Amino acid sequence: MYLERIFQQDPHQIAVCQGDIRYTYGQLYAEAQQLAAFLKESRGPLLVFGHKHPRMIVSLLACLLSGRAWVPCDSSLPAERIHRIMGLCGAEQLFYAEDSEINAAIPSFHWNDIPFSDERFEFIFCKERIAYIMFTSGSTGTPKGITISCGNLENFAQWILQYPQLSRASILNQANLSFDLSVADWCMALCNGGTLLLNSKQDQFELARFFSLIQKQSDCTLVCTPTFLRLCLCDHGFCQEQMPALKAVFLCGELLPKNTAALMLQRFPELYLFNAYGPTEATCAVCGVQITAEHLEQDLLPVGEISTAAVHITVEQNEICLEGDSVFRGYLNQDAQSSCYHSGDLGTIEQGLLYCFGRKDSQIKYMGYRIDLVEIRHHVEALPDIQQAVIVPQYDRSGSVRRLTAYLQPFPTCIDDLRHELAKQLPSYMIPSLFFPMEELPLTPNVKIKMR
Ligand code: AMP
Image (cartoon, rainbow, N blue to C red; front, side):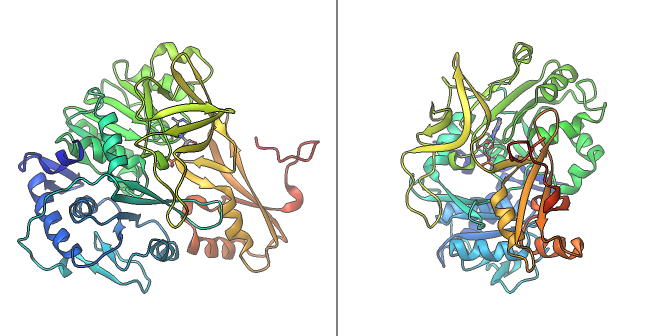
């Protein structure tokens, strides 16, 4: 059992750090037990609001101990979206993992509201029980709840821990805890008795701080999106001589451009560069492969080895299909999913390697975030006076989305007001950067939208 290991580590070892805040495994367990005792008194999923505070992890452990589903909500999400998520999952209360609060009439509690308890709970593995729910952009205009069971998570942990090259003493996190890429970092750290280093938005914004954190480690793995890696590579100091402790990078969530991988291997010749693939619906990642100089000779980089995958992968009519114990059983409040999950990703399998070359629908990845363009359109068209909107992603030469542009009809008199209204509903990364009148929509001769 891999999840059980989360509760069996050396209590003196440092488990989670964020800035100056440090939790040993012992402290993590003590707080998780106290919160679990409180959670046992009510039912339903627990919404947790915060950014990268270690109490987010305390709440995760408390949910595993008390059998409640953990619903992490990053503090960057607008209050109305959180309200919506709360309604969708039927959560009665929100737990503030840190001091910041949202300005909304949501029933909530803070750490100081939790009574002391000396009750102790054991983690009881139950395959079907929901471990967490993550919400992603939905094509209907409403966030989609993806429910991941303890069985799904166990299968993912089993797969990821078979790579000793990734299991280092410290695991550096980048993604918000409400994105499933972060499952790779906390799972790798906690199941292995390592230290999880949570990096706030601020740490990532000031790369010098982030780099000095790497320099303080003895042995670490960075878990991030290719977009973030590209940002790091803009600094020439991001190299093996300056950061010998960085031994491995786990990438997932979006296309890894060949030039990013090439530059990374040039700067860190001995690094274990791992490109993983998977949707939130199949618990973070289902396969991965070490990227080596040999792969750089191909047009497209592989996203995983099929032989070591956590699930059964097939490509049917060019679409990647996933089946097995890491695959979820269905979206929240919807009928159960068939055993085979059609990912919407276009791909191929060649010589035991999976390649992914795009989507068959309106879903994109922008700065690592998963966005359904229909959801943005839905919100723009819901604004008074806007009759029609088209949201167009613009790509750079490496194939990554550079920005989102909205074409509107009629064109409003004040774009700032429109942005302000959208910000009440959508996270900032879903708000288009540019707005134009519909007549300027770039069309190809056969009236299709020009994407590049
Ligand atoms: P998410 O649910 O946010 O993890 O997003 C899952 C989607 O990200 C997948 O369906 C793919 O479209 C994309 N994706 C994940 N990993 C990769 C990868 N290594 N290369 C290309 N696209 C990826």
